[in-house]
Image 1 (cartoon, rainbow, N blue to C red):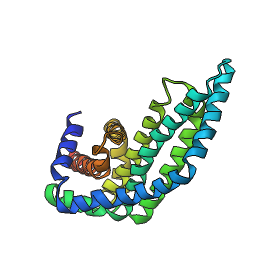
Image 2: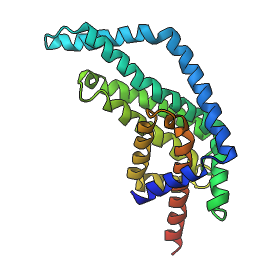
Image 3: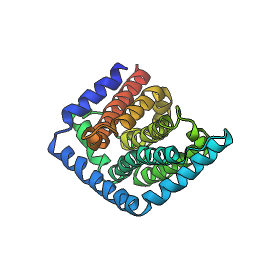
Image 4: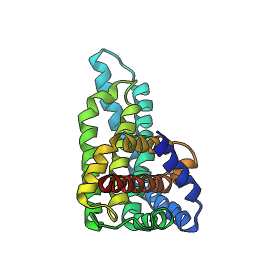
Length: 238
């Protein structure tokens, strides 16, 4: 837990750097604009469809609650809309800004860490597509559970926690680690990476703080994983 908190503290301390401020603003504005336009045209129609599915599930146990189903449908859309905005911002940040963030952290904290270039832009795009497909698969597999009141607020958090760590872990190490090192570190640090991903998913719903989440956690993932890479190489050489 201490390395995770240390990485978050490091990220918060570097958040107001001028280079990070610009990266904090424009990907979120673009993502919010894209999903805002989609919501303008699709929100009501989608909510009605989700409400029908929820009501169909309730009818299995002989309950009729169309108003409650519609309210639940809007809640589900909100739970999905907020993470989708910053997940889109993460895709944009991963392609156009993550390299600059990695350079920033590496220059300040790991100037002597060798760059072995185990990944690149093509790998980042492929990782993003794989993450999107994985999210869709998880959503479909868990769909029957969404009608259960105790679970439907938690399911999106779990899915987006998985997506967050998968997106950010690759871009954080792509420049410095080789592929074998990346696999070893992702496997050894799985628990901490999922914890960072879950904290990011939760922070997205906090007003104002959700706006800075992509850059904050991008810096945290980079700091944590570059530190893990340095420790990994040190253990092999000792």
